[in-house]
Image (cartoon, rainbow, N blue to C red; front, side, top):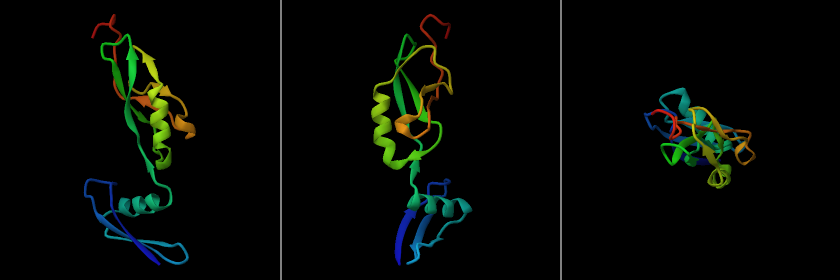
Length: 125
């Protein structure tokens, strides 16, 4: 049997979780004040995933970059590969919120989407 302590990021409460893993790999979670804590702890220990946020270059826009994020969470181990792939991305203005700027980031099956509108320099702002 082993025990691990985590701080839940499922909601703003930030509960101190204690996760006990039995010899037969059953997880028991204590310290959570809502159901999200148990879900978070189990997922974090079996398949940790994260939403990735960053920026990519924009050409012809009123700003030189646009903020982006993964459309869903990706495996934590793929974050570095995702960031490396984003370094090579440049989009042409105009850019619209929700526009896919990179499909299937790092082979995760998850797209990277813009989170801000960027007008072209010739477009009215």
